Length: 242
Image 1 (cartoon, rainbow, N blue to C red):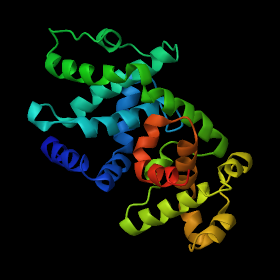
Image 2 (tube, rainbow, N blue to C red):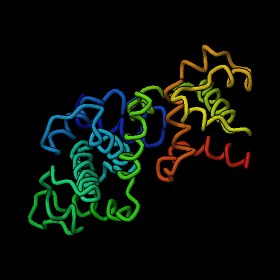
Image 3 (spheres, rainbow, N blue to C red):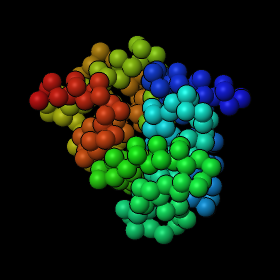
C-alpha cells in the first residue's frame, strides 16, 4: 500500500468507527514494530507500551490532516513518541531516549519536521494533566487478571450494526440492578447464563463477544473517564439506568 493510499484510508477511518477499528487490527504488527523501535526494545502485545502505542495511533487517526503534507505514519510515529514519553515520565521509567520537546513542549526549530512536531506537541500537551496513558496502564494491569489483552477491545469488537446493537443491549443488561459487574470482578468471567436470562440473546451469542464485553464493562464501571469516551453509546445507556 502506498503512502497516499494509507493517507486516504486514514482520513476515511477518522469518520467511520468500523473502518478505524479494521485499520487498527490490520496494522497491529506495524504499530507494534513502530512502538518497539521508538521504545528501543522488543515488545509484545502484553506490554504496557503496546497499549500506549495503539491508543496513540488511534489518536493520530482522529487528528491527522493530509493537507499538512506529512504522511500518516510520519505523523503517527511522533504521536507515539509523545505518548510514550508521557507514559514513561508519569511512571518514573527511564527506558526511552526522547527529544527534549516531548517533555518541555518546545520543538527543535532546526529539525526537518519542526512544523509537524510543533503541531503535535500543541495537541498532545493539552492532555498532560489527564493522560490517557495512565488509564491504559491501569487497565492493562487489571486485564492481566482476566488473561485478556487491551487489544481484545479492538480485535473482538462487533463490526456490523446489528451485532453492535446486540452488544449494547448486553452491556446495558450487565448494569441493570442488581448489576453484574462485581460478579465479573469476583469470578474473572462473564456471567453468560444470567445475561441470557436478562436478554433475548442466546448464551452462545453472548459468549462470542465475551472479551469485548468484559473489557467494556470494566472500563464503564472503573475509573477510566478518557477510555469510556470510546464507548459513549453504552455509557449513555447505562447513565439512563441511574
